[in-house]
Amino acid sequence: MLALSAVLLDFAVQGNHVLSLRDIYSLCPQARARMNSVYMTCVFVGGAASSAVTGIVSQRWGWPGVTVFAAILAVAASLVWTGENAAMARRWPALVRAPGGGRPLVRGRPPVRGRPVAGGMSWPRRRRR
Image 1 (cartoon, one colour):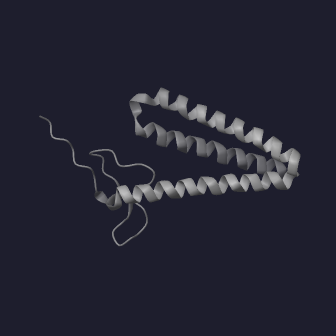
Image 2: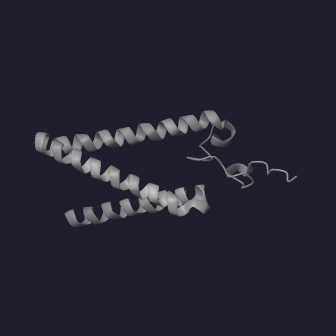
């Protein structure tokens, strides 16, 4: 059971990594190398910092403390995600909510000019002079 849990956890982490890189690469295709460097640095620093804090928490409070720390990190990430979605809804209300207040159409980033998004809407193209 422990081996299956480890395999599933690794699958989830790798899937999250791939999806995150897909979103990052879609922001600015010309700067993939720089964006990848920033992303991987943040992943490394975040992992190192949480490992250091987990070691201290484990020494002081044991396994229950580690699980509480993990829950605190999950809640903090959920709050950040909720705050980003709320800010986007205020900035682009027509693109974030479907007609009638349905589910969000675009999540996490504004649409690219001229590229159609869900619901058939798109940014107008700039006129060439």
